[in-house]
Image: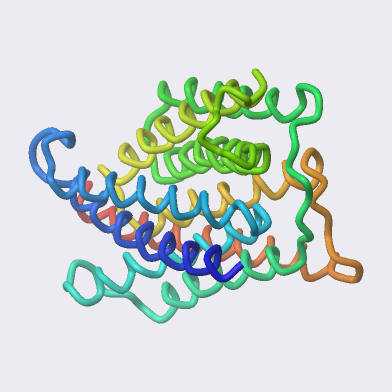
Length: 270
């Protein structure tokens, strides 16, 4: 358990710095793939995913996803320290509200076995991946890009949770995994790649924190719904109202951040 908590803390820090680096790289002059900052952010994201994978081995899916939302504060702090963007009191409260709301939702959730039962989980992963693929055709506005990145990364999160729950004791003997696990692995990889694509498209024309806020809310609430309906994760007795309140708080705070992102972007577009 201690290793899982330490790994999760490391994942939060890596995800936070990655968000800042990806934003810098996406908005830099020239092709994004030639940006050192973007590749640094991508590398940090990969490291964070591996650390989160260790955490998912022992911690509930929603706990891991909600904790990762704390990474939202890192780009905000870095932007404030570097003078890239000034943050008003309302925006700070919106960041805190997003994190607090999802933390409350996480606290209300009980973990489940996270096993593939029939084709339900695989069907959801495939459907989420299809939405992310079709979404490439849509204009990458803050809301659209953040939502699609969240859906794609939700596929990666749920798939990763299923995979780590089914790993054999000798995990390197991957040939012992059933075909369903191999399919879940392929869908997980696709979700991560498409999530990175949508996130980069969103960061190209919008401030980092609003895009990340929408992404984190979607990538927490969507896996929470899947966890509840398909992975036997339930609500603690007596915690129904706090769970709903946490979800509502996170959504309201994220919408507030989305609004401030549009206000910040408006002068540049004129």
